[in-house]
Length: 425
Image 1 (cartoon, rainbow, N blue to C red):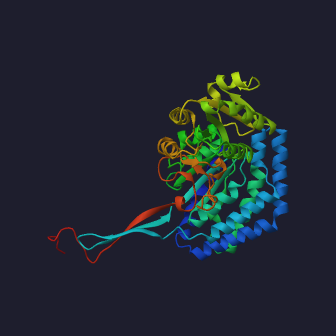
Image 2: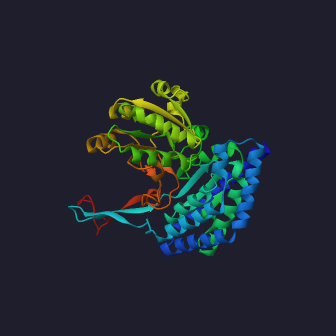
Image 3: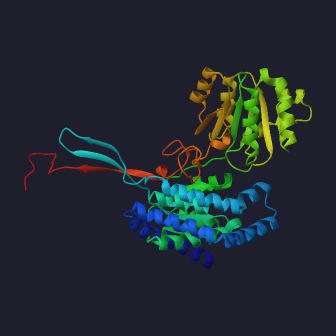
């Protein structure tokens, strides 16, 4: 009971401190925010050894607790990972400030000047599991948009997250902004539930994790949620595909980073390409990929594992792929819309009409044509670094960057305008 009260106090205190920092952030200049990003990039560079040491401690603990291979892959940081975060901070610095942009301006019949102006969302709670890079990207993207970020990472990355947030708070201080603009919550699941009830002080929650986390947030959150559903991502190889191109794209989609949410998990192949499927299966197997296929594919390639209905729904996050033979682009679209997670889905074809039908009818946040699913990435698409991939229907879809972490206010300018001429003083 005492521990519960302590966690409740910690959550409330963090939210109060973030609200205070939020007020200061409303007047933060682009130069101030960029100074913080520059300071954080420098601190990451100077503290690589300390970050890697903290991460090794987390990795050791995760292995001792029999963490899955997918969890270990997401948890591990390397010098290259840290260099990527430094480059992301530098990229963010070069982007235009998303706050204060006027994206509508007009004058009413009465002579009022009306504008829509972009403003920060406020305090953002980011809840995540085994993804310590979120402790860099989350506050960075939020900061550029003038927001404060409260991080609640999983216990498996506690040491790494703690090290990174300490650096953030130092960077904020060096840049002249309140250090409470970035905070890290500890505690257990009750801490998460407590935070999700503070809608008067936390304006948005972004969950990054598995189904259990998503369900917890969906049940308890009293503030808006920017959903990040599982990445059951598909590629469909059409009868009119260039097969050399298709092979390259499929291997890249599956093998580049199997443990990330935009890796290809399911593959649909037109039945006219059935003879080519044996070559495809052999190529995937040579790279250590287990293939789970439909009955048609298994009849052609007996060593394929027969897929069941759950395979079509599964985000494997490892070297497994499900393959189904379909009769048309319409069947492929129906399958994706039925079993997919509306994250990232692609088509490989040289036929323009087929390509357009796929684009129009696949209900996913990101739709690709003749390109690897790895390109579902904010920086690669020109949006800048991201905090995650949203599968929400409202506000933001796809890679969530700085512009997506702003909202707007309507500013009205008059000159003594009144609605009723009969009002007297």
